[in-house]
Image 1 (cartoon, helix red, strand yellow):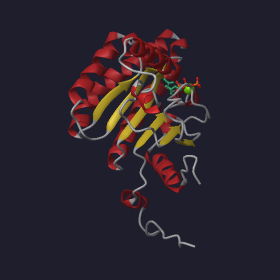
Image 2 (tube, rainbow, N blue to C red):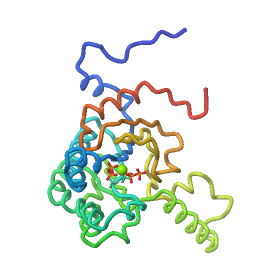
Image 3 (tube, rainbow, N blue to C red):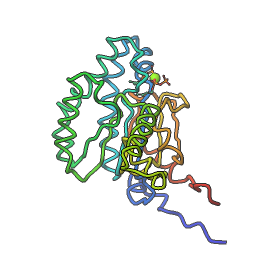
Image 4 (cartoon, protein in one colour):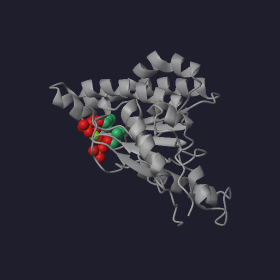
Length: 253
Ligand code: IPE
Ligand code: IPE
Ligand code: MG
């Protein structure tokens, strides 16, 4: 039997262990949940939790750059979140512009490429324009690809893909024989990206809430009760460490 060789010296600090580690997930997707409860516990209005959640985004983007993650996809607003009270929706949808006004220069200097997955057309113009500017401005960057899922819903994405596929077949741009799993992936917002290796959900719920249903088919899931505004590099490293120990079989043995 093959001997299990330790991947790193146990006496090394945790960060340097992970830095040397080759098992860093290429693509991490995060359901950033728990902002409202974080605020509620402090007797604050829900929007205070969303504001604090932006600080966590900054920390986790920095950590992702540090550990050389290639793609980070953050679930920021779902197609179901329109059910919330209008003032809360307005507040959340102002955050992308606020975030980019402050951090875009730093993201650019770190070579980050920003993208959006979701239906941008339904976003208010102030968020759409700020995000579109950041996407255009960072298009040629080769560092971390940072995807914001904004007005994103997986069923909406899949339904749209099905409609486009049928249209393309009708227009002779695609044939039945060419249509395979890879082709379907090309019709999704995540076209060209590797599938997520690791999904993190904060806030204690153990569900997908309509996030990346196709793309997460073989992703490793990691859940924590920690609310998103309390999430930090420490928990991020916990997730990376557990991921490193998972055995991915993809149906094999
Ligand atoms: C996640 O936090 C942010 C969004 C869904 C926009 P929530 O606002 O869902 O916070 P909880 O789950 O109510 O605590
Ligand atoms: C999921 O959180 C969506 C985002 C984090 C943007 P929700 O708070 O909307 O999910 P549910 O309603 O608890 O499933
Ligand atoms: Mg929630």
